[in-house]
Structure formats: structure tokens, C-alpha cells
Length: 544
Image (cartoon, rainbow, N blue to C red; front, side, top):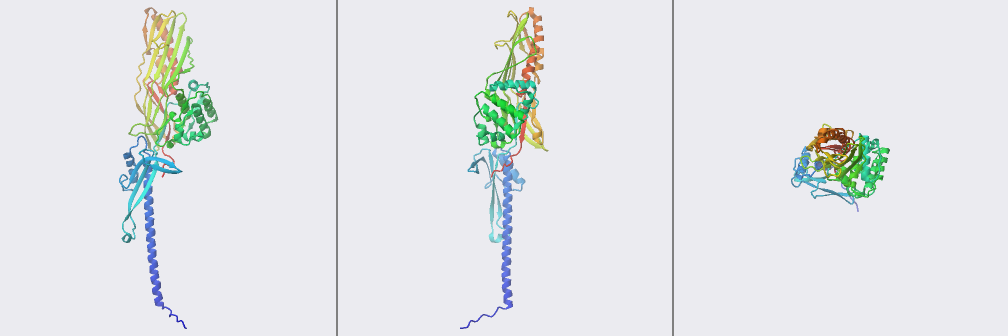
């Protein structure tokens, strides 16, 4: 059996096959090129849409401050989207903007839309052609979708009422020793230089959390009950481990913590009001260590009166007692600005009552029984705006001083201050003629150049109608109302008032009232507000 092979194809036939294969190959190349172009286009459009969603969420998150309004937040998100080339409406389906919270479940962050203002969710969609090249074959359009979640990220400020600065005087340091020692239950003897070192120390909530050893989150740290001594020890440890304080300041803070004999429970959240929707946003803001310590001590002491040693430069004074009672403790605050809405980040002054009782026996002449009583109601300061203008931070804080009262009574508090003879015959009653109207609410303006840490703290004051010095106001003889009870002793009364009573009241103002109230950021009818730190952005606000 023989096998015949077909004759070889002609060259002409081979050229036709090659041409057909080449045409098919070219069509395939064109098809894959179109696929690559369309895929690249869709990828770029999806990436651009994702960027729009991310930027919209981040921008809107900066407005999740005091009582965030959904419509305002949507407006801010839409503004950012339009600025980046988006022509859709985020408020219209299938787009969406929601407010809610972030939870971490098994290491995975999840957004829950519950209307709170801890985070914002943005969904942006865009209708695009399925294919630019093969539109006739594939036809139609498709919907691209991008989602983003950003944690609340408003600009924050830390401020309080008081002026615990590095310029504390030796007179104020002696008062602080008496105040802190009396409130904590043990003796304290620190000098002005040491207090200045503590006042210059800035620590953060993150520093305190790092040394706490128990609380796992900032929210838990703020709400954990602990003894006053343990809280003060945490502050000292945070200052030491973070390197924020020198050895002398750390040792002094440890000494303050060590004298805390009172077994009083306290929360860090009682000392510092954190009004950010997400407490973690406030983790890195700087806090004044001395403000934290004194505020914590006042809260722990409650309304117990504190006796202070008082030395007056008047030789004839036989007996002087000075007592200070903090009726309501102060509170520091960190949080966002209110803008045009209701204030939510509010710091408060202490409500303070001070009483200085004096009994004077003037040999062969007279006896004076008087008590100078000062009470200043709680004032408040609320964060109104934070703006940036040409690299300068402009901050506005609305301040409202507390109503003040100054009275002169006898030591028992049952009647007016009195001058009498050594035989207890009344000669004259003495009252104060010092009208005190509270300083009106004012908006304090702060201008902070960059970097902010080099230009803070800053203190602004609401002026007092009686001026900044009670010493000068009280030493003025016109500040007294004298009711003569015996005309025969008119010369004696005039002499006693001019040479003893007026200088005595001025001395009380100089030694106690002026330095004490200045320490607490209080004036009679006015107040001091200190801006300690500003924070504009978290490092990573985008969560999902």
C-alpha cells in the first residue's frame, strides 16, 4: 500500500494564510489595547472618585464640633467635593453623608450610623460609560462607587481660668504651699523657683495614659475613679517619663503627691472637661501641670475651709485669722470651637470665699473687731472661634466673670465691724463703700503666631471695675463708711480709721487677696483666661 502526500502549497496560498493570521493578530492587539485603555480609564476614574470621597470626609470632619448639624456637615462635604471636580450632589441618592461613631471589633474598625458626631461617612457615586472604544458593542453605562469614613477632627484649644505662669512670686509660692498643703492634708514647703518649674511643664493625656498601667483608652482614663494621691502621682510620672519636666520639678510633683493624705476618689474627667466627640482627638494637646495639680486638689478638698498663715506689717495687731473656702472648684477644658452655635467647650473659675478676721487692742485707747469677707461667684469662659489667617491662629473666647461681694463685719459675723473702748462701749461702726459691679461679658482675642508652642501660653483679662489691685482700693479711706456712735470720741475714731483700719485693709489686700485671687485667675469683678495650646489636625483622621 502506498501513501501519497499532497503537493506542497503554492507560495501564493501561503501568503494568503499569513495575511489572514496577521489580520487576526492585529484585531486582537487592537482589542486588548482598547481593553487596557478602558480599564485604565475606569481605574483612574475610580481613584479620582475615591479621592473626592476621602477629601470630602476629611474636610467635613473638621466641622464635627459643638452640636454638629448634619445639614452643615453635608454642605462642607459638598464644598470639598465640588472643589475637586465633582459635579454630583452628595445629599442625593445613591450618594450619602451620615454621622455616627467608630468602633473597633476584633481589630477591625466599623462605622455605625447613630447620628452622633464622632465620625462622618461619605458615599460618592458617578455614572460613566462602560467603554469608550467599544461603546457600540458593549453599550450602556456603569456606576462607580467610593466610600470614606473620617473621625471627628475639629480644631481644638486647651484653656483654663488662671495664670499659672513661670513668673510666680515668692509671695504666691507661700500661699500655694498653704493652699495645697491644707487641701491635701500635709505640710508643703516649695519655693517659687520650684513652682515655676512645675508651671513650665506641659504634659499630654497620651503621656498620662502611657504611665497609667490600667486604663486602656483615653475615655476609660478620663472616667476611672482613683485616689487623689494616685492621680497626682500619675501626673508626676507622666512629666518624668515624657521628659517634659526637669528633675527638680518632677521631685516636687512627687512631693505634692506624697502629702495627699485624704482618701478622696476623683476622676481625671472632673479636672479636665474633654468635649471633643472623639476623646482620642485630644490625646496630644499640651496641659499645664500646675493647673492640673491645683484643680485636682481643689476638687478633692470639697468645701472644707483652709486656714492660711498671714503675717501683716502692723505691730499693734494681736490676732489674725485667714480662711479660704473653695465652694465650687475650677475646671479646665479642651475641645472644639462653637462658631455661631451654642458654646460647648467651657472652662470655669473657682467660686471662692475668703475671710480675714482681725482683733486689735490699742493700749489705753480702743479695741477693733473686724472681718473682711470676700466672695467671688463662679465665672466661665467658652471657646467661640479658631481661625487661621496668614499663618497666624486667631482665637476668640467668650468670658463672663462671676459676681463678687466684699463686706466688713465683726468676727462673729453677727453685725458690722466695730471700734469700741477698752470697756466695750461702742464708738463707731465701719462698713465698706466699695461698689462692685461685675465686669460685663467680653470676647477675649488671642493672636498666636506659628509655631504655636513657641507663642503659648497667653493670658487675657476681663477688666475689673475696682481695678487690678484690692490693696489700693481697700487702703483708700473713701472706701469706708463710718457711723459715729459717740460724738465725744470723734477724734479717736478719725485717728483709728486713718492710721490703723485703712492701712490694715490695704495690707490684707496686698498679702492675701491680690496674690490669692491672681493665682486662681480671679479678680473682684473680672477674670484671667489662659490659652495653653492649640491643635489643628490629627495625624490620621481618615479611618476607613
